[in-house]
Length: 379
Ligand SMILES: [Zn+2]
Image (cartoon, rainbow, N blue to C red; front, side, top):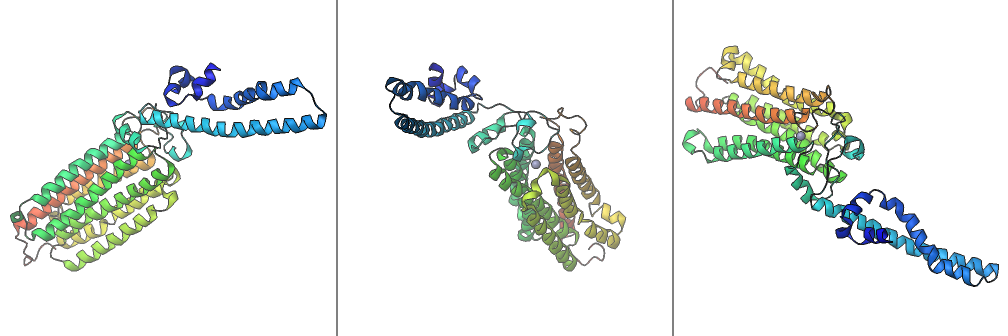
């Protein structure tokens, strides 16, 4: 009786050590406990005292069963509510522990090479955001893009606040750089938000994963804008054509990312392929520039060395992500740090920074030429 009282006395007392130990058993125990309660009470004594005729007895028994059922259902519901309340309270207080991959619900199962250290499902945004400061499989994923987000937000603000005297066409150039920073800031913020609320619920995880993938497409599209603007500074027609193509491809990638199955582990390679394809569409304008201006100019004033480095970083990141290296070779050894997803995140931030450096050099070069297009060299 005492134990029954403790388990039903509400979240506060149930959080005691005894309550915690019984946590798994309580729901299973509930049925027999309630049956016990019904029999020795009113039902048991009434049956023992005066045995009337069999028909009347049967009726009475049926009525008793009905009473027990009527009492049992609301009690069960009440107890289930209490369990739920206790769980929410624990999550709210941050009193949850990391769990192994095997016990995760299907919608949280993404990478089976990460054996331990997963957050349990926590249907509370407050708990999800508090988990940013706890150690689990997503800690590295959250922080790599949260810090990247702060970096690009600062770089973006600094660029926008740069005096107009450093630009040939300040408004136009700031819009062009603004597109790049908008893409980077949206991509990185969608990403750290997704990794933070990923364990909230299936619906929230699905919604934010679509935002996360759309963000990657926005970063790639935004990166093309200043690069094409300065590389084809004096050739507005090819510039417009390439910009239009990358917009169409980027919007197509965003549409594909809205497909529910796109986020499933089965389509890991598809995802890597879609974004790799979008990024590699830059090969065509690169060839155009190199053929028109020659290899030397492409690698010097065209900054192709930096853009090549950026491409290598993105491709390496996407490859590690798709193949799940290094955790594939050492399952359980990279659960918390240095898993493929974190390396991919770091490479994305580094590649975006290298790209920014490259387009800043292109901008400086055009400024040095005073924006003139009379020179027969350089598109
Ligand atoms: Zn990510």
